[in-house]
Image (cartoon, rainbow, N blue to C red; front, side, top):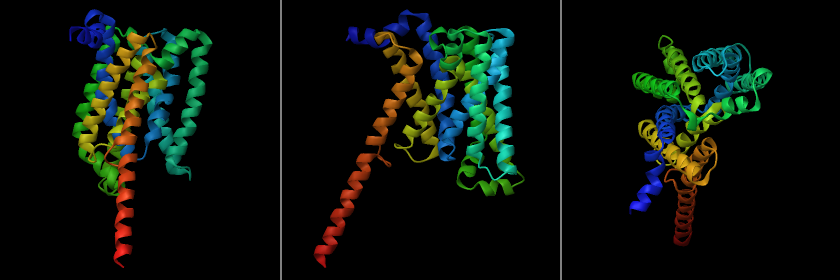
Length: 300
């Protein structure tokens, strides 16, 4: 058994950079999974991807002005993320364009602008750092940023949990209650941008949305209510982070894609085996209905 323990946990016990990578990935998963659950419940799954790209120009401007400065890139990402969120909502409310379409338009503009800005001064390695993160190279400042951001997100989500759930069921009701729906929606967007900005240091702007949406969509197949889905999504994200880092170390493959592929594997298994809407469950229900109908026809 000692060899198995060493194989499973040896890299994290022997190397400080692996412990840092695991700590940062776990902190990100604890906040990203619950946020993803509400994106799924509100049918806004693609918004996470749009906002992940929306922060790129601000990150690029921070990089151009201060190099690989964590504070500059964080402030820049927060500013552009919130600006894109406000502009997309503004366009959706004043024009016939739906909110998802306006987010898609702004995210494409942001992606092109961000890649262009990084390319003006940085090298290909700098661009890869911004797009795909450096989970195996987290320093104290990056780890502290992810931990503080996730802690704030979880505390605020606990405070606005009821309005968020009600808004998923009946958005019009909260809007009628003195604009409470708009307030909770804006707070939710701020938390989303903050988590994505903190997470780009871990998994990059292109990969961070994967640890947000894949565990959340997988949890949907195992439990029904929002609270358990949030807990399960955080657990799936944490397990995927551990498995991805372990595979990355043992197989010598990039860590960020390994983490996302581990979460993707859990999602595929959930689609097939999940008791609520999984393919096997749907097939069993269809077979049971056919048997029931055949018995009725035989009785007649």
